[in-house]
Image (cartoon, rainbow, N blue to C red; front, side):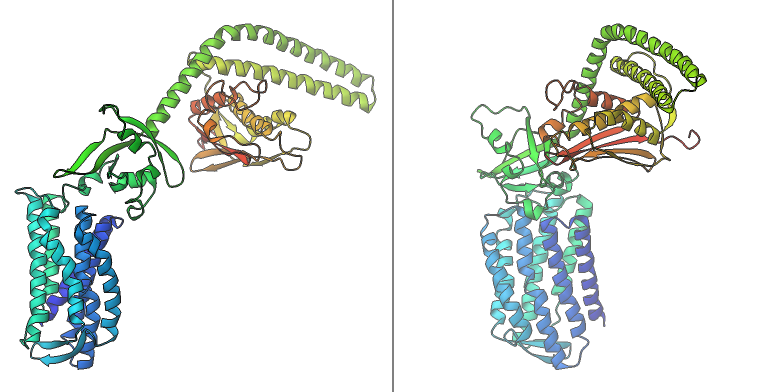
Length: 592
């Protein structure tokens, strides 16, 4: 009974260790191989658990044949995991593995469905004794040959320290696997041939080796990895990418951070030319000039085609004795740094625009103020004329003309006010002066005002499709946000000039999500090239023809949105359209 429970415990331990490895990192190839090794051992142990409880010889034979699916692949999986951890891709055992996999795939179905490997089972006092067929020699060779190859070259594969956890772990694995192989060979093959009664302890020894490995990992904090490969327990904690490139320019190993950068699984990335993701890396490392310790600035191309700016360290040669196995590089993601630099450049340019505009704004404000004053006087006089026309009871056409004139004067005053607002915004780039406090305004009303202004520049037949939520309110300067929306709508309209009538559309939408107000402007116009997207917020940069754009509209919009605590993003596909998304904080309920 104790022996049966020992088998069950061996299965439970093996499954638990395999689950722990997969939970820790299921994308690591060595982890998957070791987990498969332990699961095969668990399968074998479960078979033994049921074997020692049956009394039926036919069931015993069936269980023996089923157990071949567990013990035959053990040596192959153990050897494959060992060479993977050791990064010995040119080791003779590595070249032997494909043949072993083909042979195993051929032998296992035959062993399971025929008596070629397991011919019969005989009852003994301690359970059952297996009777082998001629195929047992082939099955045993497939299990033992790769394992013996690894055990025979263990020291050459692993460059170990004279003491410490790595050496202890190597000894645990070496003697544990050797003991399991010797014990299994003796108890499961040699002794049954001589009809000597034994009990199988191989699955228990394998489970015990797994526990010992787990204990050494917990105590010393690293796994059995040679000096020729990476210490993943350390490298996978880094936020920077680390790669090992062989002499032929192929990716030999990489840590988890680099795999996240490129968006690929380890099984796909390893063995591929590194130029697939880093076109300039190998070229930079093979320059004929004296190698400098200065970093190299490169661009990484991800799986989806995104370009990521990186800085690569100087290559570090990795040697196996006197033989070079490649060069290691440390790769640091520069997206945040580049973004910060770009924002600083934009801020500096905007401040320069503000300083430059100070001298001009005074000259503009004086005549514009005079024009506004004249319009206000004209509005008063027009009101008086309107009262006189009402008194003399003119016809409807005259009243309509008088009302239209009054409306035109009001729009002219609004236009003058917008000129004041624009000059104030441009001058405000310098960062000097006091801003008026924000007030709560309905984003729906702001957008409707902007649509009325932008519609003037729209070609005949183009209607701006407005999908607005009237309940979205924000704390803002009304005129400044109106100017942002107007700029975005005017840009969308200008992008449609090459589109035939009936195929041009502009959509503006307002919604709310998680305490943020969302403004979305989309067109199906000419779009923006990818090379220009990064510069569209730069002052004086424009994609419009000469004479049709100043390059300040989006720069002003960017500055205004940032000043309101928001974000603005632009995405575009050439010849298909452009989408602009603006996020702004919503006004608190008590303020609305």
